[in-house]
Image (cartoon, rainbow, N blue to C red; front, side):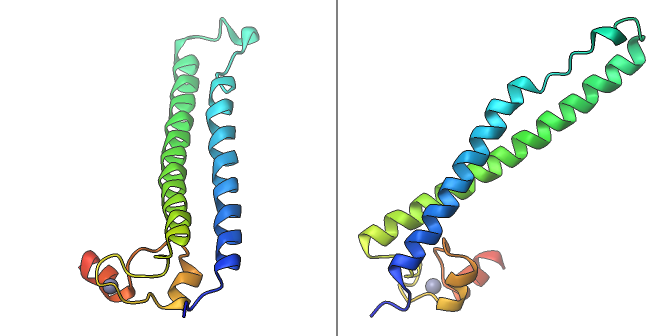
Length: 122
Ligand SMILES: [Zn+2]
């Protein structure tokens, strides 16, 4: 018997997937509109322009990092949904034991039991 409520898990993962998708969409669409244009400050000198550029670059890089992170998470969520469909959800991909339900509660897309995860991180 599964130790988890498949319908509840699916609902949670689907909500997470939708949230990540819209977050990635907003960040990728928004990234193009974020280029700073300030015609009033055209004669403001190189130094401040470069500072603005540097800020914009830092923002873009931070945004990229968040997008990459969200995409990686999205893949894990999709993989978890696929395991749910395949009936292998909640089973450790390494040792085949059931993953502790409390662990799944905290990390619904975990693929390893706590022991295997600990071994991996050691
Ligand atoms: Zn394991």
